Length: 136
Image 1: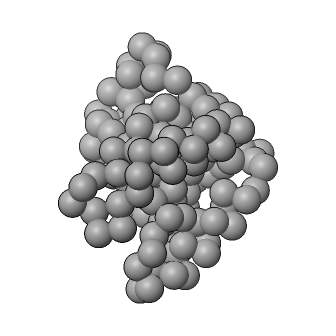
Image 2 (image 1 turned 45 degrees about the vertical axis):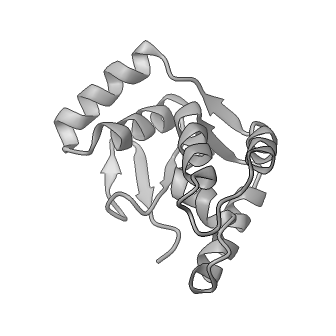
């Protein structure tokens, strides 16, 4: 089965903060698996956060673009009108932010059984999708 990787997993994979070294190792191990899935939204969020000038360990455009290109080996869900509609329904039913709801909608559309994120409640189910915090 596929597992969906949220933006924080991608960001921890490039962290140079010594306090985040265990999270970095875990993120890299998840990215080494072949059964990962992402969305265009997650890749966009990664780029914006990883390259922002106020980030202590910001990476240059070329490096961020290269990582995104490499991560496109995973199944990547486009942002579509059905994703938007599903995200709005998930937001209403579960009370998540719109952006988290869009991530859940993308994961469910791809048929993922797990969503790796630290932004939602570990162990929560959204229909057939398990929310898993891989950094606990």
